[in-house]
Image 1 (cartoon, helix red, strand yellow):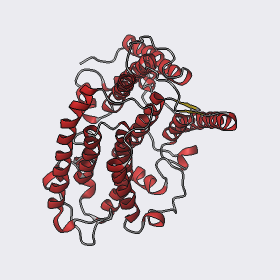
Image 2 (cartoon, rainbow, N blue to C red):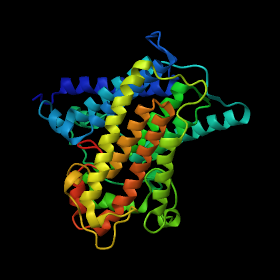
Image 3 (tube, rainbow, N blue to C red):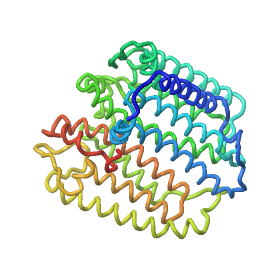
Length: 401
């Protein structure tokens, strides 16, 4: 194992600060596609696939390196106090790759003018200010892992993390994510690649917030669980507005939205005029891949229904007298029927080669992440042993989420 040393700590400090902070400045200050250090002669559809691949590379790095299995693996080779700095360096490299390699598409789908343009720019400025306020409220804000390095270089003990809700954290649990979402969607000029960026990164932020919630619950326990009951996650609405105010006492409203989303996936427009068609090779590969995903999704749903038996309910809130089920597909994910619905949505998008259908499938993922969060609060309250089950089994994706 690589032990801590002051020369190594100083080197890591410089790299984390330069790459981490430099990539954020680059990302915030340079419009996507403006630099293009490489400019391959891509077709319009290939441009979108390339940009989606860059986004997925960043998502996998950013979320994958935060998972416990990766942290445990990394701790076998290097002092755990370097982990946060390594994460900051890797995140900087991945984010810089997105900015430098992003390929733009033309022409704009939406271009705001006049008052609407000024309002969108004002919204961006307000969101940036909200982000700065949220970062300052963390005290200290150490996304690059510099604090353990400074403590080592100064021969001081590292401060233990403490859970305190200040500033905007009194209104929402993730104000930084809220600010970034507003920044993403307040862009006055939207091209196809920008729309792709908005959709993919919004879904990733919502899913990433869920992953972070699990880590925070594991770290701060009951204190964070009580905080979750009092403060909404991203959208700042009064906590008195409970699910029953719009979704019914048992979550019926969630079921209505889910049905509408499924109808949108299956029946909604698959493209629009001017949107390039999928290359023939991708469309040919998409059909069998899509059918396989649909079959797997249907299998998950059917096996989930069978495993639940008399516990099956048409609404999110469990039946009175329901018991915890851990057999069948519930051994690998906590919500296999939702996992099956996601597989079917993406399988249908691949089978029909629908670019818009892929966007609808991403909406399904985001909605089910929100729905399961509410459903699991009921499950924790009403099913004995659910909290322990939640620690052992992932929500929707085995070993990941």
